[in-house]
Image (cartoon, rainbow, N blue to C red; front, side, top):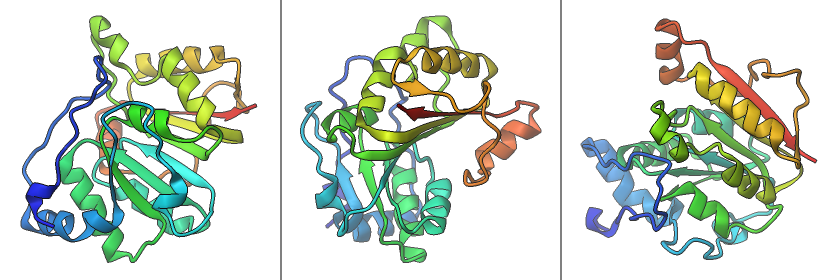
Length: 233
């Protein structure tokens, strides 16, 4: 495989929930993408709803965690390494982040991580119902301007789709450092009839969610982080 074989997907969805961006890659990241994409990578189908079978991606049957917006991959690799009994499917649109995650997976010899490139909602629409043990959405784009709120990933229609792919008892875990978005997330998740909040409002910070560089910068800037953890009924 050459670097030209990796083609970032042009999402079919008319309203994107993310900023599409490519960015520069280091030689290390370029090499990781060339070597590892054929083994660990999945290009999200351009047609929403195209079936994506987890059994084809992983060599075993295990509970599956979906990481939406894995960034540079540090948190995904830390959680997957500490949680070997579950498989992790990370979806990202930022090419250097995908390459960096692949490099980290190789460094730690992880067999329970796969990386998808493309629109997370298109990927979710193709997954079987009840196929996910957890969905993690950590620090999604807050789209702070009111006219852009329609682009937020946590809104009723998207939550209903995510919930339909969770198995009974599965968790939807969100985290944000944007206070207004945290309140909006909580209202949206509280209103979903198929989700329950086992906490009285925001959740205590779960120990399994690693502190990333992004979170440390947010805390240094005085932006507290809110966690929301909901379970499917």
